Image 1 (cartoon, rainbow, N blue to C red):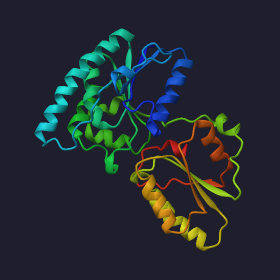
Image 2 (image 1 turned 180 degrees about the vertical axis):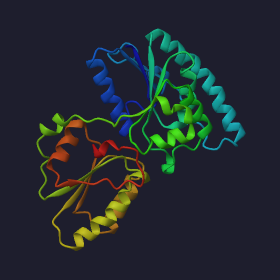
Image 3 (image 1 turned 90 degrees about the vertical axis):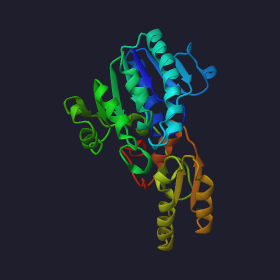
Image 4 (image 1 turned 180 degrees about the horizontal axis):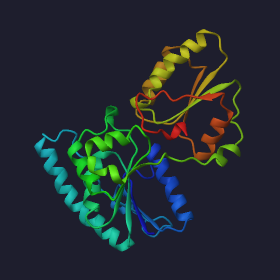
Length: 286
């Protein structure tokens, strides 16, 4: 089967991006040709690569539908992008489109579904933990989907409530993980026992809460460090919190790690921590 993967953030760092990369590998291993539709400068497209990637200026919906000018601007951009997307599907001879994106891209899904069967993958991770801030746009996309896949049981009821029509073709398929990658890993060297946390350094992930919790662990004299893998907009503020709490010798920010380094980090940890304020099914927990 020829697959088109709609993932605007493809190639970036994060849970959806990790899932997308894994799906591309496994689809190719199973013999399914795949083309990725992603956000970016069109000149950065790599259509002749092993995994063809078409990049074009994809934009999220304005968060408030009542803001007329941003809404009109988005609609004009959507029309232009849709023409290019349909041409890409025709060139790739795609038989199905799979989406991996937050719901603010739902109008693109709905447009793609007009000519190609659409599978919507609901991953959560929306702003402020809500199911969607633009329910009408997401409802339209869900109604046009051939299949809707929720990565967690908590997301399925929200989809059914928003679009009851999808109930007959809504399934829950948890995100997967390759246990062999972790079984084969050697533990990350560190002078003291440590807990591991992995994720983007953004408010949703709750690392500020985790740093406050670690002060209590340190106050009890437990000889445990905290190693945090990931990067993001809150890195500077989190470093400031760490230093203010006197944790500079106990908390280490490792930056972005590749798959092998993350496996080694988990393998060497006493335990892992997921302090998120909200989640769907975070890849870090798998």
